[in-house]
Every structure is written in C-alpha cells, then in structure tokens.
Image 1 (tube, rainbow, N blue to C red):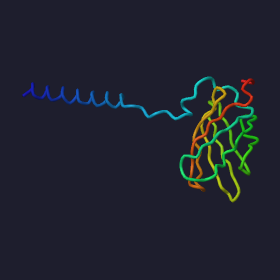
Image 2: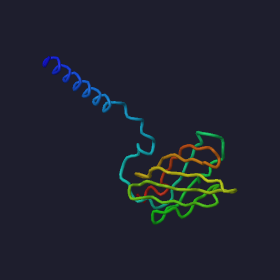
Image 3: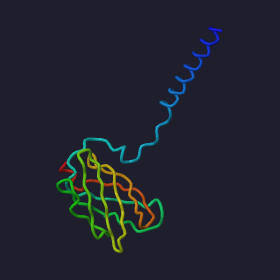
Image 4: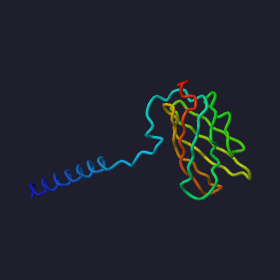
Amino acid sequence: MRVLALALAVCVAAQGANAEQARSQKAKPKSDSAAALSGPVGDPNGRWIVDATTTVGQCQSLIPQSIEIAGNKIIAATGPAVSSWGYVDDEGTIVARFTGDGQRIARFNGTLRGGRGAGPWSSSTDLCGGTWRASRSDAAAQ
C-alpha cells in the first residue's frame, strides 16, 4: 500500500512539473512593432515624421503627419487634428491624444527609441484604429 501511495505521489508531482514546464514553454505572443524597437531611448525632443495606417474600420485618421516634441511634451502637430496633447516618458513611451472637428478623438501610444517609433492608435468616436510608425526628421541630432 505504501508503494502504491508513493508511486501515486511521484506521478502527481511529475505531472505538475510537466504542466509547469509546458506553461513556461508556451509560445510567447508576437511582439508588436513598438516592443520590437531597439537601441537607446535617446532624446525624444525634436520633429518626428509620422505615418499612420488604418487597419480597423473606415475613417480618416486624426493622427498628424508630424509632431514636434520639446521638454518631452508634444508642442505642435501638423495634420487634421485641431488640438493635440501628449508626452514621452524616460523609457521612450509616448502617449498622445489628438482631437479633430466635431470632437473626434484619436488616442495614440507606443515607443520612441533609437530615432524610430511605432505603436497603435484608436478612435472610439469613429470606431476605427490602426498602427503608426515614426522616424526622427532630425536624426543627425541623435
């Protein structure tokens, strides 16, 4: 009886270890383009050229064609947005909101790193969203 109990305990322990190993070896989700950026964070201040793509829904993007960052804050944006707000933290994470005519709002976040940037954008007012990529227009200043 002791042998049977011992064998059962070993089987349960082994099964638990195998399950834990399987969980740790599961394929990790594909990293998004923002997480895949490498290189030093660098100084985010300056002009960034932005290319936004709509991948969900059908709406005109409120994401500007370029943004100007000073003091780690968005101070200017060119494009369809009437107003913009945003900042970049010490890790290179950018968070922004662009408001257009009729109180249309687009939210924008991601990463700026090594003269490049990427991330998602979405508009709950227009029921659409997509991705964006950015490059530093004054890359020589990096």
